[in-house]
Length: 158
Image (cartoon, rainbow, N blue to C red):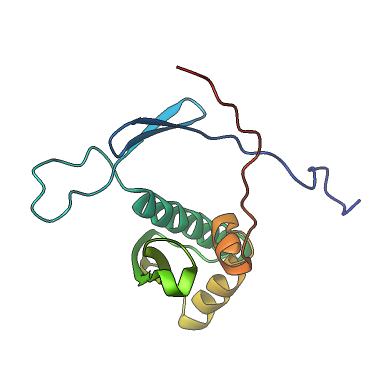
């Protein structure tokens, strides 16, 4: 055992249901999150929620923020306020590059800009940021790459 009473892995369930058009509802514990696509240029509709891409970036930002606060606590550094602004760069990959029938979009880069209030010096903040990376599950998945696959597929006839 690694000295911890916590299990080596756990399953985190999230249920996602298509609601028609580009609307999807995610059920996370007792919380419902409506996700939509932003209106295309010239489209006469209002978005009912963030896109999957925006939700992913928000999850990454939240994960890094909590990781920074945990690392600061561990290092004895007080952070009085913290704000993150994420900028994701996506690029289009053409069918020749991907082997798919149509173009797809992929993240090329995500930058996390931080604004914090703290009396700590630059060296202490750098140490906190260096240590924070080990805590962020979402950030570690992005950095290390994860496998994604379809599990059971149940088909019901209408």
